Image 1 (cartoon, rainbow, N blue to C red):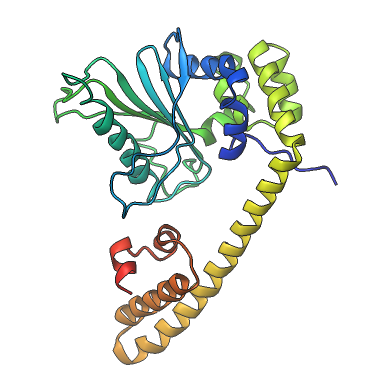
Image 2 (tube, one colour; image 1 turned 60 degrees about the vertical axis):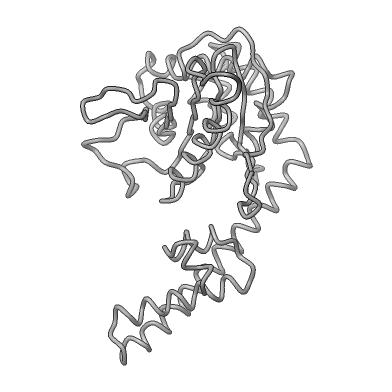
Length: 294
């Protein structure tokens, strides 16, 4: 069997390629392409999210850099869930609140931007809205007439399902325009085709192949995938148990209330087994506060 080839849809692979000092020019090319800016200098920043509150768990950004005029976070979201946007927005707002007031005056010149490379926004997803969604969504703080409250805070979300499909279209002009986004989820053969036309893609191909050949990386990914499979199996097991209990209680207490109690029982078992509150919330739709009280 052909060995599995991991693309930068995996955030770990993305970091392995773009977080290396020797690959700084590769990252600059990507950022200049997606933000339509020119970068004179780039510095890698601490990946740890600000944690002033000891009750808040620490979080590591996928990538955090500073250019001559921008503070940039990057998040690679391999799947889309309800919690993704609120969580990622909180990371950017937290950085903004910690950095913009440093010094003798508020910083209005530095642009604080978060780039989300998000998978799971395609037409077969519940998050797809034909009337509203764009392939590149830009979010800023504005009033109902479009006037900005502040100019230096921005979230950009790339629909990576669209850009992956774009490669298989016959639109050479669009492929060339977005090639640095497209390359991040291409396999070896497709990368070889794209790299013949661009030195940056050729360099990227070399780096992602190096990452795939790294035994430490493959061991990490294998462990991560194993944990995900275990989590999915437990989720299904808990869900079945919860529905069974919910149906039983529903006969006596009413279907809706019984199912709700069954979901709480499911969450309680997941909590006892040590799953994170974030994971439990994802699969039960209970809030973290509700889970804490169980």
